[in-house]
Length: 163
Image 1 (spheres, one colour):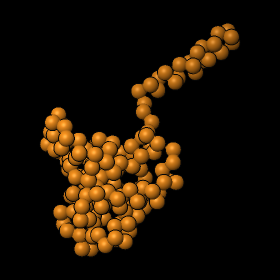
Image 2 (cartoon, rainbow, N blue to C red):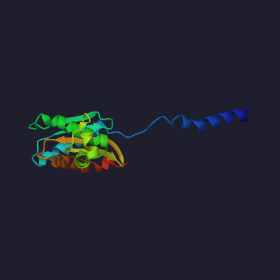
Image 3 (cartoon, rainbow, N blue to C red):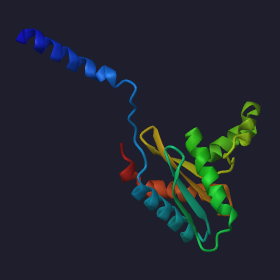
Image 4 (cartoon, one colour):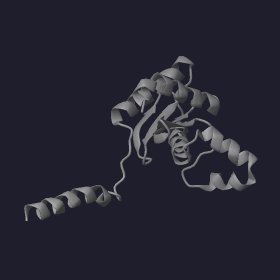
């Protein structure tokens, strides 16, 4: 009887991983790291004399941190969020999405997706190949300059983003 009970118990343990098939495990951006990325982005833009707003989203598109420099225009807040959302949703810098929409007739309708902004300045935050969030920047005198500030912040936090 003990042998049968042990056999049933062992079979149950072997089946346990199969019951977890519907459960997903993923990485996400912490509030602490999001705040650090936003501050580093602000610092990078400030060093170049740009007055910007920064939004950092988690992997679900929820804003974790939004910061606006004192002299940044009010429109830059929404622009930074939309650029971050575009980068997060597509898992690509928003500049790449913009260029794709400009050069590919099949992609031009991307501009009609609610929440998208097809301007440079949004950059996905990745751990390895997994997108765990995004940074959006608005307010520098060119989207490529917004994007550079976000890229500089990601480079400064590279150690924290190692897989």
